Structure formats: C-alpha cells, structure tokens
Length: 484
Ligand SMILES: [Zn+2]
Image (tube, rainbow, N blue to C red):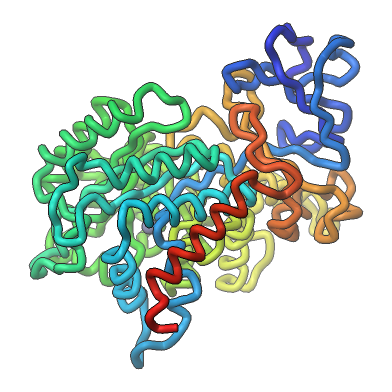
C-alpha cells in the first residue's frame, strides 16, 4: 500500500468508501491518477492536500479494472441462437458451423457494430482491457480489402469509441486442418503465407501507432490451423518484437488427436519443442492437457487463459486450474464466445467447475490458507477470492501485455466500482466483501468503470448505450431477420 502524499498538479483523485489494494479493502483511501491516466498513488484521504479536486464515489467500493484476456467480439451476434439441438449429437463442431455462418455475413460496418456492443457490455461489467483474438481479415469471397487490416481496425475503432484498452491479437489461420480439404467458410480467415501475415501485422502495428490504448499481439489460431513452419516464423517475429503470443490450445480432444497424428506429440509438447512457450505465451483453454504438459507450461513461465462460461457452453471440459496453480502456471480469464460477458462469472466458474468435478470445496484456495482449520472458514474463502480476482485482473494484464491489473504506481489507472447497497452484496463487511463480489455480485452491481482515470461508465450506464443497442438490434434484424 502506497501512502506517500502525492504531488497533485494535474492529477485526478477518486475517493470511494472502500478501496481494494494488497488483497483486501481499506476505508479512507483515495486513488490519485496523473494526466496520462496512470496511478500516482493510493493515499490516505487525510493526507490529500485541501485543494484537491476529488471525485467522491459514495457507497462504492473500488477495485482494479478487470482484464478480459480472450474475446471474439463478433461472436456476440450468435448469442441465444445456438441453444437448440440441430443434430443428434450437438457439439463444439456443430456450434462452429453456426459461428461460420455469422462470420460469412458480416460487413466491416457490422463488425464495428457487433464489436461496439460486446465492448460496451464489457465496460458495463467492469472490464477495462480486452485481448481481442481477431481472425476475420478478408472479404466473404476471400479477397483482400484495399487495407488488409480494415476489419481489425474496425474492431480497434469500436474499442476506442467505447473507451476500452485493446490488445489486437492478430490471428494467423493457414488451413482447415491436417490433411483436411480447404473449407470455403474459412476464406475470410486464411492467410497461407507467414510472410504476408507478418507484413500485415507490421502495417497494423503502424496503424495503431503509439496509442497506449491499442497494441498488437500475434495469435497463431491453433496447431490445427497453422502448420509448424508457419508457427516457427510467427514465434520468431513475436518474440523479436516482445509481442504477446496467444494460441488456442487443447480445447477439444479431437484437436489433441489430430496433433498427435500429424506431429506424434500432444499440442503443448509440440509448442515446447518448437520454442513457442515463453513468459509472453498464453495457451487459451488448455483443457485437455497431461501433467507433463502442465509442467512444460510452468517451466516456461507461460500463461493459460481459461474461459469457463464458454467452455461449459460449448461442452469443452474443465480447465485443470488446480494443477496449473500447483505448478505455478499463471491463469488469466476470458469471455471468449460471449455467451455471457461477466468476467466475475468466469472467475467463480474456474472454481465451481472443479468443485463439481472433485466433489470438494475451495479447490483453488492457496495451500497455506487451506491448511488452516475448516472452522476458520473466512480466511480460506478470502484467500480463494483474492486468487480468483487476481486471475481476472493482474494475470490477464500479464497475458495481454497491459501495464494494468493493480493500483501499483505507474500502472494504468483502470478501475471499476460496485454499489455497496446492491442487494447481491449489501451487508458484507470489508473482510467479506471480496468473496461476496467474486462469488455473488450481479453484473448490475457494477456502477462506474474508468480507463486511464477517465470514467467510461457512470451510474451503471455507458454514454453511448442507447445508440449502441439500437444499432446492434438493427444489425441482428439484418443478419437473422429472414427466419423471424
Ligand atoms: Zn477462442
């Protein structure tokens, strides 16, 4: 906890009733931000100079902004449209057909509208940064747009207009799969030549410029979609420029099987052998991994991104977060397909899915606290909630390369508040509040969201909310109106 009295020239100060820092809530503290939107300090209110122009956030608890490390914004358009059994055995692969049908129909403007909707919903949920795993690059017929990054830039514009930070994780997609015929519904994703991908990535980085709110990352889609020589080229490029490198890994058993058939190894083993694993690497999902693969991820200090609300919706399986934590692998969280956009639901899902699987409670609680008597339940829950909250903030920031995720001086002044009178958390003591928020808060309890010290959500509303919703409704009508 920083208590130094700040130099208040050109600063903004926020004063909530309670402020979360160092694993617990404190009363009587303020967050001081500089003109560049970075944290200057967390300071005792009585130490603030008298003339400070403070924003008082009454009946609010303030927490570091949530980081959504894995998103496909456009998939917001299929929400509610895949919850029907289309064949005798619906699965991830039949869901994917529906997603492809949507991806085929989207114009650049539609991608902007869908992304803006997804990002606004994120802002309303307390999310301040997003890792957007973006794979729509080409026209529906597979041609190049005049600017090959047109669609990525529409997504970045949507994030900017909503007010979120975005890591634009530009996806490389080379083929349908090992020994698989090209699939015409993947034409918008495919860039078969890694040199072309890198050229486009560089031009995207230039277009994003030095904006601290938007930056480039590299994302080979999966071992299924990217052959090994391509992967090597991307690894060298990403690490030469210190870029985050994200990849879907072991989401489905069929993907692991195909990797073994092609490479004689499981996916994480292949990535380890090819030098892809590193502290800048994030394996998204990592559901079907062996203990040996967990150890390889730990050894490389790589990250995993779990997406529990999507993984349960798609029937992917349960992320073995217990094994990852035991081995010291960092775990970030993502809302992925946007069945729900509520990152705290993903945080609690990480734990709850393991409870259902193991028939135990507090599975992910830190070992040192877990060793205490079960009758001293509170500290155990507090330790667990703090750990899950860290996944939703600091670990996500590490994964996407954002200097955010905590109120440490110099980091981004990104935060959200919850209403202490919201019925889902009212009555919690400062000691119980974090577990109450992580396990019980409704998204509606989020009242303010700030990015770089600037409020993008106030009193539970985004300033563009009416327009964003009505444009999104019109888009949905255009996309799906014929069958309604
Ligand atoms: Zn994904």
